Amino acid sequence: MSTAASVPQGKVGTWKIDPVHSAVEFKVKHMMISNVKGNFTKFSGTLTYDESRPENSSAQAVIEVGSIDTRDAQRDAHLKSAEFLDAEKFPTITFQSTSVKATGAGRGVVEGNLTVHGVTRKVVLNVEGPTEPGKDPWGNTRVGATATTKISRKDFGLTWNAALETGGVLVGDEVTITLDMQFVQGA
Image (cartoon, rainbow, N blue to C red; front, top):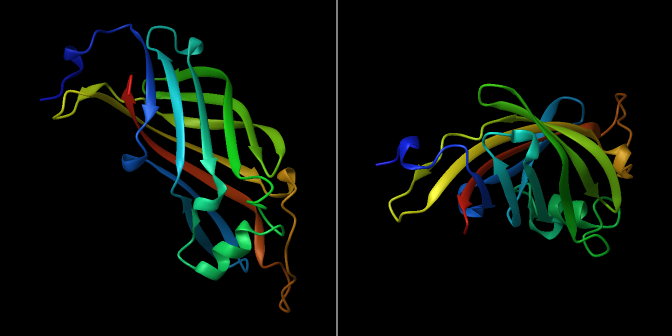
């Protein structure tokens, strides 16, 4: 049985990402006609959440570039190569929050520094959550949240592309990132 009443309210807690119940996904336009989606399968991070003063909260995450998966081994190898993410030289993507702001019931904005391909830029994540805490069958307390943002590949030095005969380019510049996170308290 999981109820919010079973967890003390107004408490500051440290939560770790549960990677088995979370997802780091992205999508980008391919040939200017459809989106290609992918995800990273190895990542970690923490959330320090102050329920009564969300502005005192913070989040950080590390994503292993080599864990990229777009369901196409050849494309994954190209994305890991020096033409794109250069996983050998830049093995991780990192995020560190700089501010957190509640914008309504169950909604917020997290600003922070995203480092991709050795380039750090400020990004804004629109967040739904965190959810009310709940206990799992093993006695762990969990919360969930979803965050989204859009970035420009070019802002991070990811400029490889190919012109199409019909006009346009093979890979779009705008990348939509979606984080579906489940966190375990004090794990």
